Amino acid sequence: MTAEGFAKLSTLPSLESFRLSSLDMSDGKALTTLTAGCAKAWSSIDLRSCKLMDTSAATNLAQMQSLTSVDLSDNKNLTDNAIQALASCEALSTLTLAGCGNVTEVLLPSLTDVNMSGCSLTDDGIDGIRVCSALQVLILAGCNKLTSRGEFIPPLSLLLAA
Image (cartoon, one colour):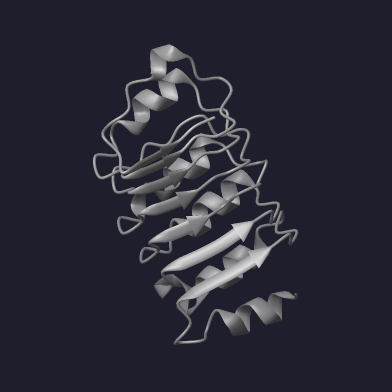
């Protein structure tokens, strides 16, 4: 898809949710184009395996204030800095980071549903999850750096860890 195509999509006034996968968005231009139009009003965006770059992804996604759900699975370049930039998205409740191996913590208080499968979550990262007072679902499968020290987790509706 070209930048022109992204520009046209970003102006569709009724579009609320957008799903891309396996696109090379490493130059940041596509995401910048998407967030320039009506995309700022989207409630959900799925950018799994899109080769996002840390800085550009953070800057652009943070502009989308109405986001309630973000899937950034398998974006290997994302770090804690990019995820923390999403804190300005106050409506954000669902965050999927499965396979984002450089992510070690999530400090976003509004989250109710977090999937960190295969992340580099540590015991200190679990300490950070405690700020998510509304958290109901937490998926930690494949988080091999966790020890029993990080076993205190707030009451949840669902916890999946393996």
